[in-house]
Length: 462
Image 1: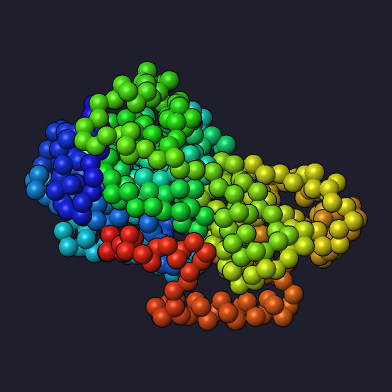
Image 2 (image 1 turned 90 degrees about the horizontal axis):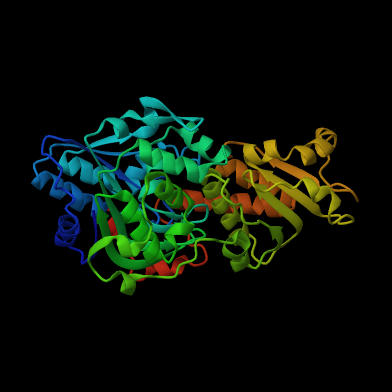
């Protein structure tokens, strides 16, 4: 197989070159049913999309070339993360709308499908039962179009991880609650065949998967290959991540007799060594979300790989809003736990004597897995205890799978703010929300100023 690396110059010709150099359409017949799977897992109108979701520019170019090739049965499919950000529109539909995919589909006569709606086929992935969209399993030719980005759980999010969007909402959650995320990503790519991967590197993202904690850069690169494994190996290398350190790639290589040695891959086009970056994949919530607003006394440790993107994205946006609206505030001694990997069982024995100490358990997974702390404080919570004593922290439960953005904010404000400050923040947030919906106000969090430069082009998503 071949991996092509082509500089994106803004033209359809660069997309064409990337596909031609790797022989991407060599096995594609005009009569084939084609499914395009972008990375459009979640999208909020206030969040800069750069490096986070696939550009409509690349998708549009691929659709045009498919039509030239004689293909007429073309579908774009995605299953967005649900129950986050309190949006009124269906989540996948909102993602298509806010990235311009709905408009290009209408322009070219392409069908759109929401994987979340089914129908599904049940698969057993080594003991974990998942539901996969029939559309992904029954297509003749699957074109996988991820973004060139890192990921705080899996180190990179490229072609392999992009197929997780083909799962039902409950199956996505099961990938995390099983504590086998990398293993299941590997097995899923044995069950779903990618015929062509095109990695959209117009932008790349450090400390992904989103732009609240992550930082996007302009890269102007397209990678393409009929072999999704080789495409991901090259993509990871360019991001500065050793493919051997990406667990699902390493497992896939061992299971299928493959090598992740990039020197064994035939690469055409640009020089890979000259393209290689050294991006960080791990992010520190305290550093990225809280410190820019100079808030203190609130700790949010790195979650490991059991925090799903739904809880992660909602909590990151809520913390960003809380910090921005309360700059310089001291929250006392508050510890935030989430996912399955962070267990505060020993919290009751730490920091005794602090009259302001609190523990926040975020999301159903964390609440359910923190059995010891839950048991020792259940009676106090039932009695309405809200302040710690010398031996027990005050425990705040924010339930949900995931908790909604509104619920998250309200619970954090009630637990951490005085009543006057809480009312002030509620009023401020309500005004901002109206302004956002009327398109007369644009929320800017620390670090987002960089996206107003000409280097970042919103037309790539229209």
